Length: 145
Image (cartoon, rainbow, N blue to C red; front, side, top):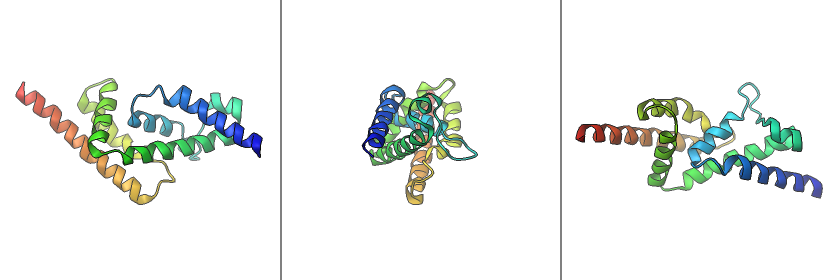
């Protein structure tokens, strides 16, 4: 039991220190964690970590991290969520409009599958509003230039 807990903690440390901390925004982390989920099975897979800690432990750790990052984002004030989204969108290659469209299409899948429905609805609603505000801000800057 103690060995299992130590493995879990080491996996969690490795994931956060080496793969999540370098990602500067919560939206970037959500996108990254979602990218580790296989669409067909819903399982989280990270080949490097699985080679060290085992696939089941890695799946469980990533699932837990995905939920925590999601919940932390929703705990932020809406203005902070907007700042996070703006930073994430501006970090992507392409125009703000193109990146906002990508976020609108893919961003709703970034919610963890085990998240309660009401939190997923809140997240999707916030994302829609924040993307609209982001695009409105961008068009206002263009009109005022």
